Image (tube, rainbow, N blue to C red; front, side, top):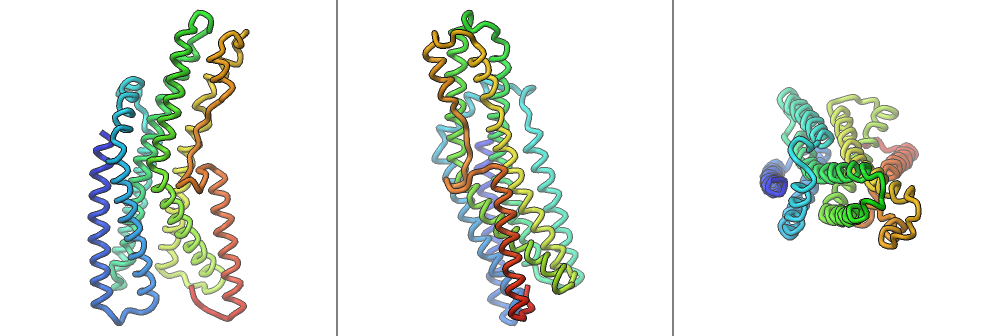
Length: 326
């Protein structure tokens, strides 16, 4: 089911993004008298549109080229879960908050367009955020499904009181546990590049938005509609990364604790060489974005530190050079 949704959403997102990009290219060619600030905004939108198209094409290719993975995922899901046990509160909350923010952003931008005769370039950013959130939403769904699988397995492991009487059962569970970790690594690899794009675009948008906010608050004191749009962009950017990191940390934190606790508290575990070997390995899942960024809470700290450092340096440079630009 989620595989089909992923493919359809990627196709729809790519098509709408191409339409927005085409409309703004036509607008740019027709309106040559556009002021420089609006031209810069349009160029940024065009660049983000191209990036999003490439991201959706990559996402679509990853989904279609890894259909065996989804078949395997479906088998595990049916084996470990049923409709009553399926809990997707976190991803659904992410989607609801994201849709609400996007609707608020679009309504505000349409209001500005109508009242101040601004062009559609200023509210197309809301769609770019909304589109990218769907890729993140699908990734979080798979992480939540894996969390449910591990949670069910942990409950089964906790019900075993005597490992000697349940040696075959615990061996089966360790094999199943190892397979779930492999499945987690496969899901991470599938979304790795998409998550890298999300992290980089979020970092760029957060840094630019933070700079605009600091400049308006401490330098220009010009609180127009652009200021509130930058607040909107800054909040969305940090929200995307926060949700991404939260679901990764949630799965990594607890997924293997009960298994290893059971094995460690078992007396004479040395008699069971296979279980002891698995216990010593203590396999752990980890999530990376493109193999470059480690997806965890430290990334949020480094993102904030990088943005603040850049903002302080640029503002000081502009003040020393006497420039008055945002």
